[in-house]
Amino acid sequence: MTNPNYKITDNYIEITIFKPLYGNFCYIRDSYIRESKRTGKKLKIKLPNGTGIMSADEWMDGAKRIEKVFKIPEKPMVLYGNDVIFKEDNSYQDKLL
Image (tube, rainbow, N blue to C red; front, side):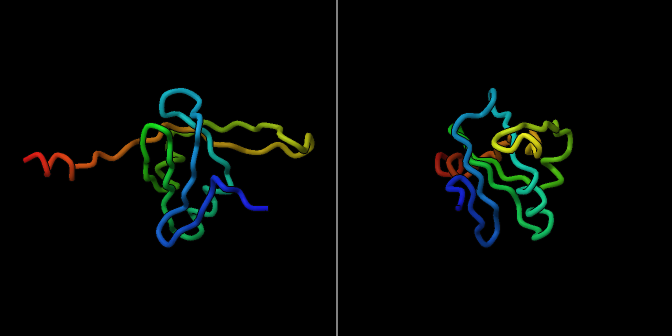
């Protein structure tokens, strides 16, 4: 079974989050972070109010770790939470000038 909110492209690991916890803060699975470190790809996190691109090390810098039980009580899922930082898109400003 594949996850429709997770996709690996040539340069990124794309993660779509429909409801962040608050503001731009959200949690992602530790397996996505390990995959990013192993392959050297960046995390492209899509939120309703924008898209942020971060490396795994940038995400882990100051991240909050939680263990949450979803289906298997004996094996909780490890999640790391951080604020998604949006990069400013200067192409729109260049068009105005």
